Amino acid sequence: MLKIKIHSEDYFLGKIRFYVALFTAKLLYHIIRITKLSSGTSVIGMLVLKICPDFLKRCNKYIDVKINVTGTNGKTTTSGIISHLITKSGKTVINNSMGANMLTGVVNALAVSLKHADFSVIESDEAYLAKIYDQFEADYLVVTNLFRDQLDRYGELAATKRLIQNGIDKKPELKLILNADDPLVASFEGKEKIYYGVENVYYADESLKAASSTEEVFNCPCGKPLKYEKKFFAQQGHYYCDCGYRRAEAKYKADVMLYKDHSVITLDNKSYEIPLVGLFNAYNALAAIALCLEAGIKDIESNLASFKVAFGRSEVKSIRGKKALIQLIKNPIGANEVLKTVDLDSKILIIINDNYADGRDVSWLWDAEFEFLKDAKQEIVVSGIRANDMALRLKYAGISNIKIVPEINKAVDYAAKSADNDITILPTYTALLKLNKNKQLRSK
Image 1: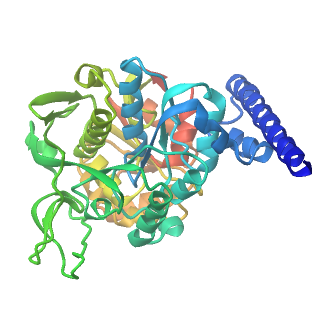
Image 2: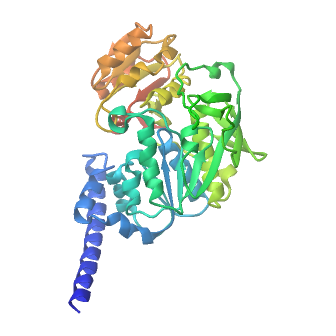
Image 3: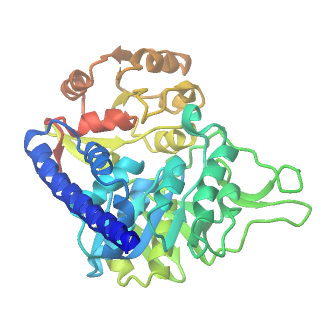
């Protein structure tokens, strides 16, 4: 009898904590929106977990189908496309759209918008996926790619892969949507694996074919280096080994045509126009399409064209009447793919921070090929905590026309005033959050 009473008290106390946490989250969210004292992407989650440590577990019953997206690059864009297509199909969705993807950010996103939803689409930091899966149920996991990123946090790629595999192992019934062209991603172990990949890449303009010398080299399980029939960038491509090991057959295989301002994916004789630049974004879109087809989402072709990117992911803003394209950079491979797309006639502003969420180690600046910018027509402005490091890297890339403006808002103002035409802004993650508060940058 006593045991039943104790369990009953624990149950009701837990429910009270949960509802108090929900009320507090929504109240604090409105205060933050009014005062703009914080970006509001994680602070609410921290408080919610203090009040109700098992908050995530209690959210499960409110959501029918749970989708997670993880990987090094493309998480925010991929989860954004999936959420957009779900919403356009007439279904409801909860999504951590600002890209705060550690445990507190995920709790934050759920707490401020929790209600019964058909889907959740949660972008998950690689190192936090297992912690999220300790409490949160899962139906699908999309893995985009694995590149070297924030070595101070993740270490080498084998360590990052183990972190994700630990999460997968906690959910045996999970459906994995995997990038067949990435040998590390394709090798994840799970009960049900569904692959997507690129068959061919075509270019509408030869200037888009800029080659990168930064590559990742992986060995076959037999120990020999992998060979490639086709290599698209980094380790992405059609790989094989003389021992017989080769790229998995993709269920969703696409041809990609790249244009200067968009791309077109052809899959099963259907064409999907994507309002995003670069092959890396075509991969993100293909991952999203594969997931949506698996989940039974309708009208994908007609709804893709209206997708609006998340802040800083190929987003176009306006400042002083000039177009400003904002492209997040955070590791060598991702930066290279962005640098290939930069308009060298534009005014270029690069903002490098080394806060925890950016990664303290900025040695990646020397692996990224900023040489792509050596023919820039205008002075390049550098800003942020590591502005001097960025200026030095540009100098070694053969660029001498550099202006250092460490304070970010002042750098934005200077770039806007001195630009002859359009502006390209390349920030790291916390620099992007700072930009998001800049009142000069307006939506187009």
